[in-house]
Amino acid sequence: MPTLGGNIVSGNRSARDEPAGRLLRHLLGDEGRRDPYPVYRRLHDLGPVAALPDGNRYAAVVHGHDAVGQALRDDNLRVLDAAYLDRAGTRWREHPAVRTLQSSLFHASGAKLAYVRRLFGQAFGPTRVTALEPMLDRITGALLDRLAALGANGTPVDFMAEFALRLPSDVIGELFGVPASDRSWFPSRVAAFDAVIEVGQRPFREVRAADAAAEELTAYFADLLATRRADPGDDLVSALATTDTGLTEVELLASLVIVFNAGFRTTTNLLGNGLRLLVDHPELLAALREDHALAPAYVEEILRLEPAVHVATRYAVETTDIAGVSIPEGRPVVILTGAANRDPRRFPDPDRFDPTRADNHHYSFSAGPHFCIGAALGRAETGLALPRLLSRFPSLALASPPGPRRHLVLRGYDRLELLLRKGLPG
Ligand code: HEM
Image (cartoon, rainbow, N blue to C red; front, side, top):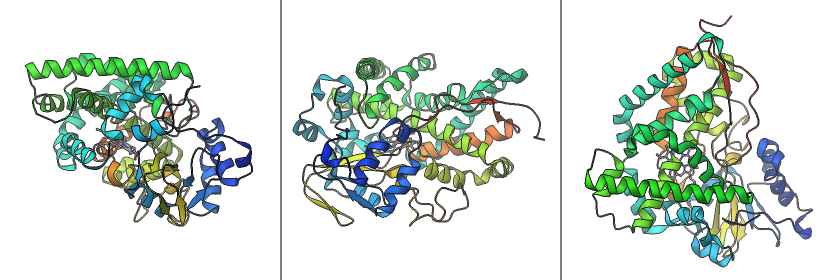
């Protein structure tokens, strides 16, 4: 299996008996990915940061709430950029998917990162998102109509494919000016590309599919840029096509692919994870159905408890102290935002779904220089869609138990079969 982003934990003998090393290996195995929470609980018993002995891929696991905040905001900890990957000896340049990530804002830092974030952020900032509400409302309404038609006569409907994937795809498609007729082309490519951002080794066939998807997505946006340069519209791609961005064409295209992808399955998974939590808590579900104004607090608690992204990786550009643990220069750390969200020192009864929590500060959108630029949009999409879904289908129920969630980055269900029965329960 090829090594791409450097996200691999080696299992050498000296590390084998180390509790934190063992826990991390377990977390990155099939069982840990399916249910990471027992590992998080045990890591919290070890303190906020656990150093890993020499021989491990990572220098430490950072999982305490305050330590995660410190690590994400520390300028000495950088995303695994080209300088890191070159030093680690990976052959990343042979892979179009990794080249795309590396040329995009995702792996930029310093002034360049701040500049590209401003360039793209104009389309997704909180003020702009408020102005987008009528568009979100229209798209949500059309997709609910579609669900109703598909689920008529008690036919089970897959919420993920028929709603949760389509909503963010239609929204980001409109923002980017992707013609509606092209939108069904994206989901399979975006899913294939996303394999490279999952933590851990990926099978070779997934890497090949991600590389092919990166090339196709890049070619698509190159065409769209050319079209909009000749005939601009009122959308983000037109705005970027007609501005002197100061970016090379490769950098601009890479950031278009990455921002488009980032706005897609994150929200998809938040919708699915949130719906499952609500179905499992019928009283809380009924309260949201009756009072849509509760939605923002529900969305924050869904984000905290079942985030779409559980992990970030960084490396130390110079030796750095995180909560008393020294991270040597050049060494990477794994930052478990999903664990920070359930730190018992920060959240009373952390595993309980409680949308009335005060001061519900989670790290599901990261923090510091890479804080998610689509946070306001993701919140708005989820906060609008979930209560409207509940009101439209007041007695919706799962048609069958959903399969496991298998990833820590882009963590969500493959399918969520619903029965959209009419009338109130019971
Ligand atoms: C609810 C859904 C979302 C979640 C849970 C989420 C989560 C995240 C997280 C955790 C990161 C930081 C990764 C890191 O620190 O290494 C991030 C970054 C990012 N997100 Fe989101 N995101 C969501 C929605 C969106 C949307 C809708 C967009 C775009 C419209 C978007 C665009 C981005 C971009 C471009 C970055 C990279 C920022 C940078 O590197 O400076 N996200 N997101």
